[in-house]
Amino acid sequence: MDDVLWLSAIRRAPVLGRGGHEFGRVDDVVLRLVEASYPVVVGVLVHVDDQPMFVPADRIEEFGTERIVTTLEEGELGRFERRPQEVLAVRDLLEHHLIWSKSKLRPRLVSARDLGMIPFAGEWRVIAVDVAQEHHRRFWHAKREARVVDWRDLVPLVGHVPSARIRLELRSIRRLHPAELADLLEDASESEGREIMAALQADPAFEADVMEELTPQGRRDAIRERSDAEVGELLGTMEPDDAVDLLMSLEQERRESVLALVPEPQQATIKRLLAYNPESAGGLMTTDVVALAAGTTVAEACGTLRARAAVPENLWVLFVVDAEGRFLGQLPLVALLRAADDASVDQLADTEARTVRPDADLTEVAVLMADFNLAAVAVVDAEGVLLGAVTVDDVLVRTIQPGWRRRAEALDG
Image (cartoon, rainbow, N blue to C red; front, top):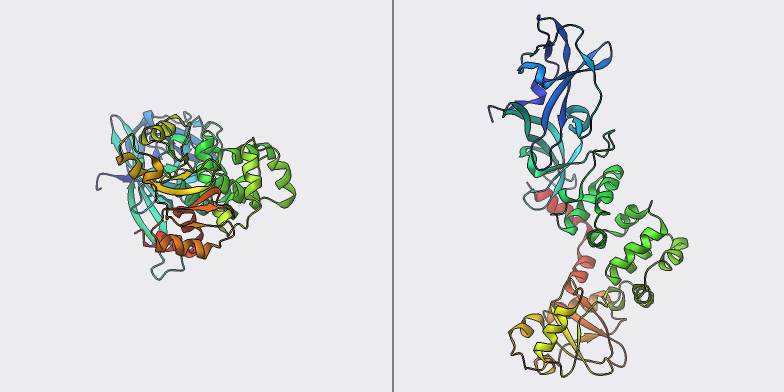
């Protein structure tokens, strides 16, 4: 990238007027953020008598490491006033976090160490960022590695910038997976976390997905400043088992008032799940399952799925029950899709499928699912009535060791 002009190379470069007199030296570069494109250099700042003075880009004739030559006469420098969408390269971006959305393993927070600019269509634009990856110190190869990244692969966190018009937009992070955003929130500072959560509030369903991926402490941090009504509304959009986890992460004195604000029927479901130990099958299970009555044909089952306003996120398995709701068997979704339209679901179901009681502990559930290669296991009561199901993703979340995520980040070179 020999043709790139780096910010570090022009900082402190002399800024000259038309007659060759020196106004001062470059203190900062003013950029205008452009959605889905490269920031535009709109000018440079020069400190004169301890005041930031602005040199507009259209008055700059020579922009280089040796000097900045302008067409300005003495007395023409104006005071700097920040305009919407403007950031200062040094003060607002260097050593501040950006989201690197296309990191090799997963998105991560990186620090900007330098900015690379090139002339393009009559303007100077920032096209590259020299980022520092801060590997976790617990690993043998812990260090700060530098690499140059295309600006378009980065999302700047600029909530600290004193301009109400500059904020993180949901569309800039919407392409990330909820689990990836949850990891970013865990690593973000308090102000950065607030900035990300504020953007997520534009899409309550997506916000709920992210909340479901956070650790208990992460959830507490995310909702600390939210009102009871806001938290109650959020709980109503989450999977019931995750809603219980979030509710239990609240201070005890808040739980009852928040639960009372959860819409029905989600409120009743959450109350039922609260009766179970969180590390038991009852505490792990989701009640959002697809249960089909015995005698239902494949065509009818497919019609039922199409007619539902929403289907469970992890719809790998369908359950078959009798008229009293007792578990009769289960079948993979793929088996339903491959069967003849007039086939009966109870004929296709595995009637020998294992089940667990609500009081089964995490170890028992995990071993059973591993031994029998189950993507989901039904949870039934003493009479065999289907209560819900534990899915493999919930078991994995509980069994992943806290340090594993950090190790994965450290290996992302």
